[in-house]
Structure formats: structure tokens, C-alpha cells
Length: 292
Image (cartoon, rainbow, N blue to C red; front, side, top):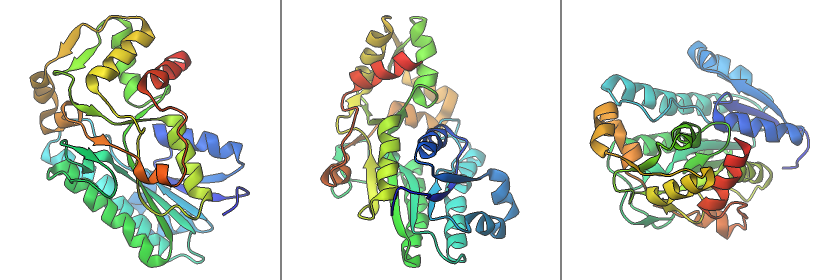
């Protein structure tokens, strides 16, 4: 696939990741058709209409994972990922010509919080988040049966200057109120937004990209190391510790997104020669703080 005049259809286009992808795609003169939540509410025929002519479909849809996981919100999390992905794949199967590539999303929460995980050597989590990610990926992988080149990116925590996790962390740190979560020993697998965008450009233009990829820096850290890097970049102390029990009281089961973590390596990206611009957390944080 060439870099010229690529037509892209995208779910989740208004989010943090989607907005950054669109900015880069404009540089390449690629056009993007956004598929909104209201489009899904109209059903598969509406999705099919929006997919017509698209050479690439990017699937980023999903309600925010950080929140109180009531049974009702778990349903929202599932429907906004699994059901929307199913509808997109079904719609792709009914358009001619079919898209050449489908790039869908998953998360490192599919893995256990024990050990180190690559795509080939891993242990999956047996909890709500792990099961959700498996369902999500299973729906996306059905696109392979349509002879559509399919890529799934398992996101680490995405770090950037205009949204994502750091947009919530920087304000309290600037006030000197930052600190670790619990003892800070939980793994923190992350990726700079610029590297994430570069990986998408590569996946769109390189037909050799197919299957599941961990989209994380090759150098995961701990929550304590993240806290130290952020405090140093902002020239502020990080003396506070957020007790895990306080997060459990606020978010219930959903607190595990903050209190647990997965140590993940991007083995397949590295094997395919992908070069990360931000390899260490200190450099990444400094870059982001300068832009904030």
C-alpha cells in the first residue's frame, strides 16, 4: 500500500489517540471518515455506508476503562468494544471492494500482572479486563476470514501532552501533590503517543504487518519510576502515596487498572524493524512536559 491518497474510516476518531492519528494522516494527505457513536446506534447499514471506499479501517471505539465497574458499566465497556467491533467487521464483509487493512485495538490488560509478556510467550489474565480483551480481539480477528489484512495493537498506557494518563497526573504533580500508587512496585508498560502514531503509519503502509502486536516501549518501568521521572521533569517533590484502599473505595473492581500493571515487551514490532523514538521513561516525560 502506498503513501498516496489513502482513504481511512475510523471509529473513536474524537478521542486522544484518534485525534493524534488524524493530525499525522493530514500530513500524508490521507482522508479520514469518522464513525461516531450515533452511527452505531443507526445500525450496520449506516456503518456499511461509511465504510464504502475505505482502504483502511481503524477501530479505536471504547468507553473509558478507568471508572467504577458496576455491572451496568461493565456492560457499557463490553458493548462499546465487542459489539462495535462485531458491527464493523460485519459491515466490512458486505462492502465491495473490501478494505485492504483493518487495524483494531486491544490492551495489555489482557495479560496477567505476574511475569513478563511478549506476544508469543505470555500468560493471560483471568479477570474481567482480560476476558474483555480476549472477546474484543476475537471479534476483530474475524476480519481475517474476509481476506482483510488484520492488525491488533495491544496498547500500553499512552503518554502524550494533550490527553491520556498524563493529562490527569500533571496538575497534582505541579502542585506538589503527586506520589506513587500503593508501594509503587506495579509494572507500568507505556508508549509515547509519537511512537504509537508511527506504528500506525507503518501498519498502514507495510503489508508485512499482520496479527497481534504489543504497542509498548521496549523499557517498561514501575509506578515508582514513573512517579520519579514526572516529579523530576516538573521540578516538584513526590512525597505522597495514594493508598490502594482509597482507589478501591472510589472505583471498586475498576481500581485494578491503577493498582495492578503488566510488564510487556514489543517483541514483534522490534523483530519487524520498528524503531522507537522514545525508549526510556525519563526522556518521554521530559518531552511531554515541555509541550504541556
